[in-house]
Amino acid sequence: MSETVGSPPLTAALGSPRGLVARARARLVASPLARALAVPVLLFALTLAARVFAFHHSVIDTDEGLYLLQAREWLRGGWPYVAVWDMHPVGAPALFAVALVLFGKSVMTIRLLGAICVAVTAWLTYRTVRQLQGPRVVGLAAAVLYIGQSVVLGGLASNTEILFAPFVSGAIYLGVRAAVRADVAPRWRDLAVMGVLMGCALTIKPVVAPMGCLAFVLMTLPAWWSGALPWRRALGMAAAYAALCVLPTVLFGLAYAARGQFQFFLYGSFLAPLAYAGGAVSATQAWDRVVYALTDLMFPLLLGLVAVAGLRRRSLNHPAALLVVVALLWFITAAIAVAGPGMWFNHYFVILMAPLSILAAMGAWKLAWKLRPALALPAFVGLVGAVAIHAWAIDTMPRLERGWDVPDPPRQVAEIIRQQIRRGEPIFIANYHPAVYVMSGAGVPSRFAFPGHLTCEWDRVTGVDADAEVNRILAGRPRIIVVDRGYWRTMRRRVRVNLGTTLRRSYVKVAEVQEIGGMVEIWRRL
Image (tube, rainbow, N blue to C red; front, side, top):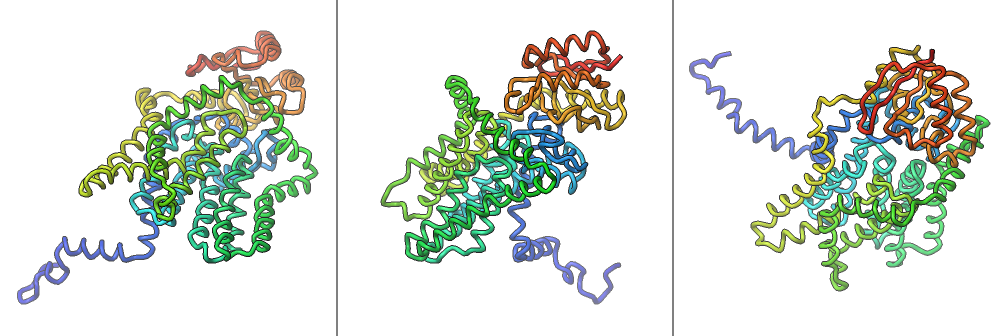
């Protein structure tokens, strides 16, 4: 279409390109939906960028492979503990199963699940800061710091600490929202949502209990102190909250009881974890693991100390001080959750990262404002960006050095097995990743599919004779046996002897795959 003589120019009728862009931007900013989605979408994009290597590796942590295997069997009708045993609650495989239904039956689905959980937790961290009248830029900084830190100390895997974080953060947010309205009694609706959130978190890992207590205290104590919440109603809320926290676990128990399998649920959810907790690591091991974790978290911890050091009793009514106090209480209860099991594994410290991110953001804000006002914001953004990128680089740089196109050993092993078996045929993975069962399409020879429970050191928590179970599997002569020679010595001596004899007499090695610790051998029955 061309312009005609006597008509106004086309740019005059429609507006200049710069004007069009300005009006479009103004309409976008004015849109309530756009404003509501801007931060969550930004945080999700940053999360995907930070966790890109999670989508490159089929196995990051062995535990998540067990949850994946449990989820696969659950979708086929075999419930956790019965089809595939574990000593954790059923919440993690339940979330995995939902993700597999929604996003497809792929290992990458659980990576997407982890990214969603991190992005939601980051957004709730931002909302918590804003609820306590923290500046928007500090809320965004806390969210970015959480995203950056979420990849260190095993956080790149979709492990329990990543999975329950959104539920805990949601409960803390609701508690904070009620706390800032201390002159009004908490609403039962908010209490119900908070109880269900913590109940879901408890079905993933019971260590969240201290943070659940903190969420309830935040919701009720300020209102009780101000006189807005009568003590009788407070007691009623406490009883209702406790009931809601245990409700999801009770419902799972009733579902198992209806199937006549309650004994499996009772032992796997409660008795086995108690046996596991009885084997806490030595003080020397605990110290080594704590020092390692604190080294990775050194810079956010230093910034957090700056924030805490600025607290003064006379300034506790100031919103900034209140934000630091709430984050500090959250950090302390998270530290109790880390220490509770007595194992001090790296991924336990991921529990600290949401409150630590708030403390670090406040510390950076305090340092930045020590400068001239004109330099405060650039200095703040630069400091937060440097700390977040440093945390991200701790995990990412070694992966970049190995190269993007480096072979993925678990996938290679799974592909070799897939060519050797009929789909669904049981194999025996003696001391390698249980995720290979899923990737190869193989069946499990026993409900004790996790090597740590069957062939390695944690056999005592299963409640069965693990050596007899291994001998039963070997007597069944599975078509394929997988052995990781790099971790051969991690298996119990009796298992090594019996397995070695079986391989020499009845199996032939058909392939080897190079792993970090040594060769992974695939043996086929003669």
